[in-house]
Length: 278
Length: 278
Image (tube, rainbow over the protein chains, first blue to last red):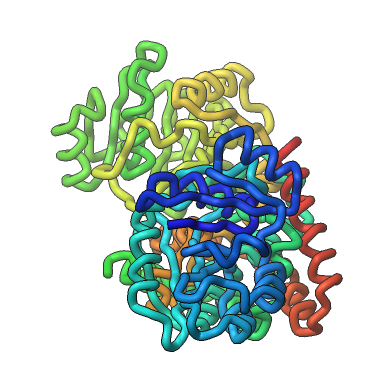
């Protein structure tokens, strides 16, 4: 099996390393950036390397598109009809509806299944790639209607080899609605917290909760600007909910109503305990 | 040196364990709860144990008040004039202005210095206490005007023995203003996130940022209701700032203005990087 990884950044480079030994595969990496190729070569990250992915598409049994979101969209629009018939194509984009829309350019005789490994870190680029990046992470899969069962099984086995906690199959629409909540708004909160005027005065006063919340604030700006804007309607709704929930806490504090504050804290913390237990 | 710890909960029990071997001290624990005393006895957590702290006060060289916030306030108001002359008294309360106000009941010949170990976990009680709880944590100290230098040096040595990252000396007012930001609002955010209607649908879709942010949501309700209400003005201001900063992100998404979104993300993430580097 030939696996082609298009885009050797943090995710593509980490996948290349983590897929080593998966079903006797040959791992081929493509990246237009000469430095990324040189790093991959120097560190033996792929079996074969190439600057241009296009001529490699007809020979790949599994193609993993690991570019930035708009790059994946553009790649599919340009090269959608050049994938190997019967092969499997997936991507690693953190939103899925827009990518499935672009996937209309991929013929039905190619098995396109969207993917989203829920892993990352604050430092980007292949020089920060890590074979252990996907350990214990959820891997979300969004099959296209009519895609073959054998392609889905191949990707499930791949997530096992990557060390993921599980593979969760969902629709692009459900994926994007839930990811706005579980991932995107967490990043919006982290950057919004860093806009507080006290940020630089508070050194020495940080607890674990502050370090945890702001950990993701030093984000990859072009990547997250694309992710947010490609899922804006869902994200806007989740931010609005959060503003409403924060305002409700603020109002009960302004009313100096201790029983109401206790009742609200009991309600919210019970929800967290209930969610953690199930 | 006799160290008296009043209140054997998570913090008091952890301090008793972590102070073992500190300057040849004898560690005396007091708690009205028979189960807490029995647990401390069974696990050898203190050298001496007693249900009633009052008769122990005249003999203690260092008294650590580790009750809940309102309990510390009431204890000082009731027993403030019974501490040993020349001894040092501190507390572990997460807000400091209200405790310093109560400390007017402690005569000037006793060295009162407020304390706040920035450590904790989601499970309370001595049965969850841990000698390693304070490892690498900031320990905030708020000396009262006129308190002796030797008392402050004693508490600094204590924080070293506890394994803290550092001891930061500040005023009660600055402490409460900054702690509203670095700790209290992080807990308000965590519970507010758990009020989102998607909470129970999102299993399988959580990333590290979601787990980190909501980790503290299963909080000790009576404790945090007291902490929030005793610092309400500062906390209200910080929540309002956060609502404003979230709304600004929401509005740039609603305007579908990608360059403005990128500029905002660059600004916020640069602040985080700048804060982490200094």
